[in-house]
Length: 386
Ligand code: GLA
Image (cartoon, rainbow, N blue to C red):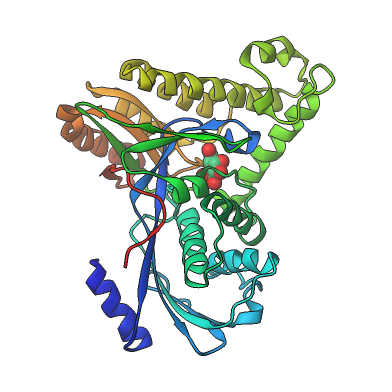
């Protein structure tokens, strides 16, 4: 959909008058999975697709929410913008409004808001973070609250915790708020110190493969992993004083690993600590232009998520296995929360077509699902577009 078409939809719905437009992207994580809520490193980039929000302030004391993707609509009094609305999509923007209200900020005027997304939902590309961040950017700008970007990302994360009940880390909202075209974000999720690393892939593309098996982040499995990591911290504490798995090096972990009695908890920790190391290494390799090594680390990441963290599943594993059979694939792994969703692969330019055709056909034959492929473009973080 073009910007002009979007504007026309807004006017059709809410009538003639001024309208402003904002956009926040989804993300793809290159490496560093399930490390963010452990205070570790991640390496995501913002995508060129995400969620749009068109808005007009009104004299009414209500905010109207509508979407071009979902039939549910709502009209909420400005004092009630922190009241959850069942399990509807409007809960995400409401969760963000609520964070502004918690800061004691109030809304003098109401608004008409129309949302539209071109990022696939439930695919592990952070459509929910894009929705939260675009809402935060819109409110901040339209009501002149002057909150900085990183704080907006944190507010989006809080909305996810409190209104979607997923105890997620900061990666997705941070990438959506802080992304930069043609860069990946090397983020320390403990301190939020970050570095924008240029992603100049000579002759190589980032290909995202959607398994079309919806990732079920709210199914409780994600929160279960978060709890298992906390259990690992407790099990390590008698031997080394840490508050998060991100505080123990791989070498030190190997010394205490055997002391973690519960096998599941031990394997979860093994994934997290090794993944943090892989992420640091991968960024070094990318900076040194060593894509082959970067790809090997991506492969290692997937295997660890499959064997130790157990968040992949048949569809993601099949997509990765089929990808690895193609000559010209440098590395391939699941991306995002897992349990379905997407893989991310580095593929040589001249192998992209074969990749899409062969992986597509073999994956469909094995799973009965039709995958969708995107050659990723790395875009900017949330912004006003008109
Ligand atoms: C989801 C969460 C993120 C992160 C990833 C796994 O996308 O929202 O915070 O934990 O899973 O790396």
